[in-house]
Image (tube, rainbow, N blue to C red; front, side, top):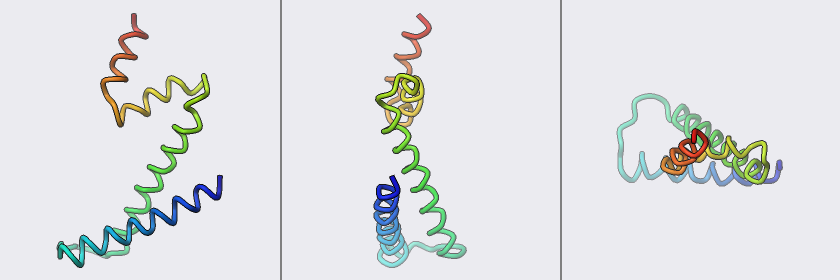
Length: 90
């Protein structure tokens, strides 16, 4: 699991670097505050998304996580969750 986290973190750092270069250098977007804060926020947002993805991928095949899978999937597909709630309520 540490290998997956390390690989994803390296990819996330590269994506953050590309984002910062395109935003600040190429498109010349004005930034108020430190660039270090922007980088830290991007890494925190990416890390939380990575953790959510790991949780969904490990809990998808377990029966105990199946209700949570539909709730997490609400981020991606709202109609599926609404239909599942209607079925559960009868």
